[in-house]
Image 1: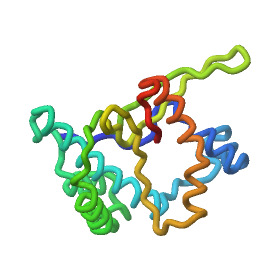
Image 2 (image 1 turned 90 degrees about the vertical axis):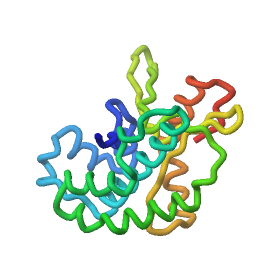
Image 3 (image 1 turned 90 degrees about the horizontal axis):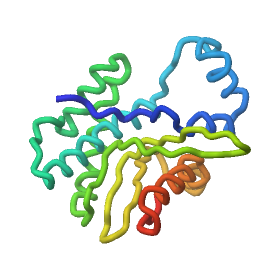
Length: 195
């Protein structure tokens, strides 16, 4: 068994998002190198979200495998995947295993009856973007791609402590969703129903 990679894709727009949010932070981390900020400190929010993503990736990959008739033993059970990821990372990651498992369990109980076809889990979508004679690769890792009827949707899971107008606006205006719109239209045309 192995863990599904739930991190960023090779040419994602996360760096652009970082620049838009704070040009100085972008300069420190991307131009001067991470060492300019000193040792990396992982925030509890990052750890919780990463563990949650790990559990959901394995939940949906198992769901997809069942439909395809694949061997389920290739993929960790969602709760075990959370434990494995925390064990690999060590340190304070271990402190959040229980919370991540509780959150993912609640999500599964709420969403398990969805009438969807799982098309992809942590799939790396890619295209090229041209501007002023230059062409750049653009990739995004989609947490989940589903088909509902004839429509394709990209689902991006967010693990937040509270959901309010400010939280929604922060994500709604993120370049990530603009990228998904470009990538989804290119992949599925008019059958793309949004992210």
